[in-house]
Image 1 (cartoon, rainbow, N blue to C red):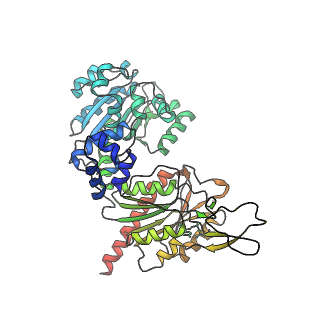
Image 2: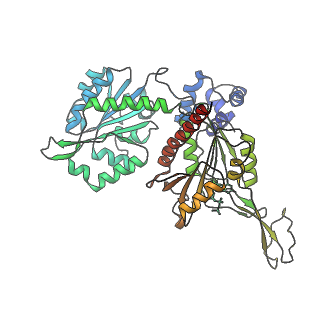
Image 3: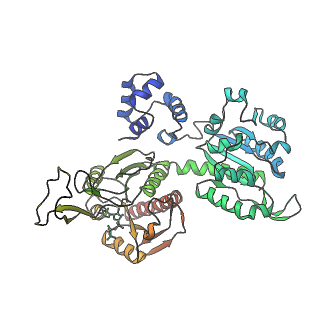
Length: 482
Ligand code: CTP
């Protein structure tokens, strides 16, 4: 299924989308065939996604700074550093970035919305339940339209609300309803900053992919000193501008690179009712597919049956068995990169009677049979087959799920399967399957990196950086050889 077909199916199917957009179903079928939506319809599609509460931005071409006006929403929460946000506004106003501002109730004790409006020359939003605001720019539009939401200063309170999903005012509701990149610039008393509760919230938010502009250390307005001061506005704005540039560069890092990813478990039927499979959730492979798509890669995800939402990527192929997965991988070759993350069932189990006779597999095996035996038939090793074959992609990456001798076993898979990199993890005690966190070890021929425990999203981000290095080295070797 191509990317646009996936998107239409997420939005309710051809008929439903045609009805919502008041256009002919044949036009939608054409979009699916061409794998493209005309730019005149992007806004309507985004609005439909937003109405249905589905994040569909990754399905459409990424916004480019030069094509669109970049939008930042600044949320000012209440602390002695609130006044510094006025300088942040002044500096952002000097760029061509479109800025909106939301203030919390306590921020208004330090500076007034009128002061903010006099700088932005725009309405400053303060109230979740304003009838007037809801008709013009409701809290969902405020949450969805910016490319970046910057909270500066971010108090311990607003961090705690976001970390725990509280939405009791305009600012916290926007933060919860947003798909945008969120950047927090905390500012508070040093004891509050170092409090275990704040530090746990900080870690939680960081693990979820929220970016922080770390507080400075020094003398505070309250007379104490330590970490908790809002960095200078100039540094905050510079950091954001450099982030925007970095994101734009990353968005095309894998442009024109084709990537095949296998993910999830495979299943092998025993009879029409029963099957053997494993505990793989597909989460890590889906995060990698999503990250590579964000960076401009042409990603085909070949996945076994999973119970998690599909990531946005060019192409998704659903399979059941190891043989189907291998066939699908073959059909998608050649590709530049292969990442085998799937937990492939190593054996097919063929049921046999006690006298070694086959069952009729069209029918359910009844328990009235005196005994049931299984013959095991080895499945193909997809990773090794492709990595040793004629159509080997430039970079081949495998995973290694181990319960003991992690590095030794992973290294022997690296060599025996002829791959460039093995991402190994310890799966004993159900520590990885279905979880959101992962602790991995990266094994190469002459290198071994042990990464600290981090979210699967973060593993995907760092792994994609690593893959980028491997690809650059490969391309460099090619240039040197010429
Ligand atoms: N793999 C594969 N096809 C298989 C088995 C494994 O493509 N039939 C790939 C996996 O996707 C993974 C790597 O090989 O990238 C290692 O898989 P793993 O299950 O850890 O090890 P196995 O090779 O199956 O060996 P063992 O189960 O004995 O550890």
